[in-house]
Length: 261
Length: 281
Image 1 (spheres, rainbow over the protein chains, first blue to last red):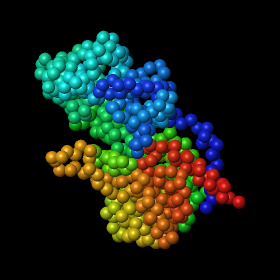
Image 2 (cartoon, helix red, strand yellow):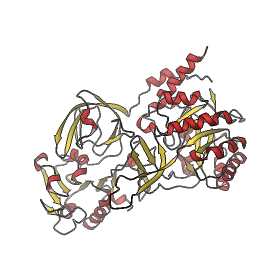
Image 3 (cartoon, rainbow over the protein chains, first blue to last red):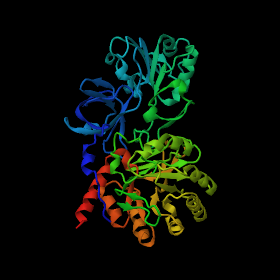
């Protein structure tokens, strides 16, 4: 059973533009995470993602936590396999993929996050002249120190146990004095990275606080399993008013008012 | 060239024995920036049904060690929408397109074939059967395709149904068989807590443990079947592909490993081409 491949040489010449590598530079603790720096040409825009091969059966979704001219940073939990890399080692990547946050020509940017999901919003801390960050965690110890944020960012903290800031959770943050409710009318763009279970509540808050919010006023990042990154596996489908959409190619950033809850 | 359907009047020749399995590669354009399609023997599409299907309720994937359990519900926008969207792409793709078709009844399958009549962008059909398909139903679906279409038909046989279905399908006119679709399994979800009943996820099993099961099926069935067999399940390396071909499979389908290593399709195709060139006197 012989067969002949006519274009073996040509295969090697085709540019596979989404298959790339990043060079690991360094990692240092930044409790409760580790900050890891990679060198890479064309790192992803905020809200877009890479799929990194760390040896597991599925590639891991990486959202940049900071962007530099020469690469990007990610935040990973302690014990992550990236900590076994040596400086100069390469990591096999696919991407960048997805539609990220749109913050062009925004004056007043409101960021909303749960502390453990904050990382994808960090590149936006200086994306507008005025930035307010509403950050929630179960308790003070799980919040990053305030000095890690640029001084220009107005920081509002919410803790479930009331150890610092507003006492409550994002989901219960609907009293008139809540920092989130106050900030929504102020902002001309809202970007959020939270548990998707909070997004129906956020959509209701936006509808209550804004009269006819423009499209993409409230952009939310949905973090679901995205094994392929290219819309092939159909595992990351989410329900929107326009029908089912793939988080990996149509998102992972969506208009919160487009979700069907 | 490799002939997937030697008994069919038109045949289904492919240039390389490496194909993506249905459900892992989309409909043709998803991997345009990651895979050189010239390495593919054919494109096997994501499963397509006559009417639109919605995605299964999450969770749709569970990971345990090296293994994945997946249950997507085979969401797709329906045959008409797929043809509208991908017909032009398939025409200029440069590799044969094998449409993976799902249907619940022979009447539904006849409707599918009716919509496909005159389609020049599709070179073959792969019939997908689930593990509950009886012999009678499988044969009825196959008959419905053969009566209403001139296209060569490959049947992807469910893992648990090989012994019941493979021979009857081959004798009833299937041009080739894909052995097998992924076995079904259950896995506990990671959110399980001690004081609640263990939530389980049901789905199709992918991963290296499937490969020995595949070889077992191939070694038993290939000598007993009068049609070509395409190997599918847990193939993750050139050595795995060689083992399948050594047992007599005409081609291999790569499944979930493509998501992690899309370049593996080209790597295996290239290595097998080298094997073939070296074997030619």
